[in-house]
Image (cartoon, rainbow, N blue to C red):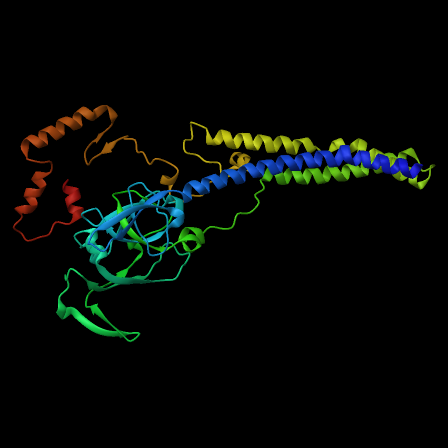
Length: 404
């Protein structure tokens, strides 16, 4: 009878005091993690479904354009990238639509730097008159295998044939490659450097450009520098788990002390039964509901971050550690411009014999107007003095600054 009561009490106590709250906590946590996974899945679909323009030739000296999703892009595809469009894969620039043959890209998503990077097309390809001429070339690229180094790249462009006959016949060399004669033109090899590339996840900031895909998927620089996602736990969760362990041992010790104070006059089974009864009574010491409240509050705070008008375009990609934003104490940055606007406020202009402040702008204006009335441009007297100097002496920059 006593054994039956013991197991009944044990079963009821664990069911309503431990198992049920634990199952509820796990269900809430799993539901929150499922929402995060669904959200990340939708974001991945948006990224993979972005449309780009694939270029190819129809064989009649014309260029065909058709849309292609980023997830369908393969190595060797020639893609046209428009301004402010994300680069879908690692590419070599073939041709730009700027007269200088250069474009600018933003790499803040790749290396964290907000300044624009200059990129240019190979001169052999940029010199072509049109895209049709580009598709009438026969050649190939040779370049390094996939690597994590985002600031290093080595390759070479080799052109064999041009159907328009732009290359003279006396520039042809006969070579033998796999028993097939190939016409290789002299001076039609060009080295490919980092400045001729556009890595995935960067943004084309200037006019549109045409590039050929060289790395995709996990071989892209961006993916190779990304680590596998892990389960993230904030400092608050670790502290809560640590405190829960301490409270668990306090609960066991308290139940043992109460059982000892009650006395050992009864049988061993009754003593064990009393011990577990006291454990069930003291189980409220462990704040299981606190974990549920934390999970719900983290999910709510993450959604509020996404919709906060004071921080537009912000995305909370994980709802597990939003509270860690309040724990930031130090920010390490290589440049102050990364965190500030680099705005300078005028305080004072100091010259050789005088200085001007905010209250003397009118004096500066009068001096400039007087100088401009005497000469065609400011400091023309210094220029004429240098021009009419017949001594043959060269005025150094230091002396020029002293004269000014």
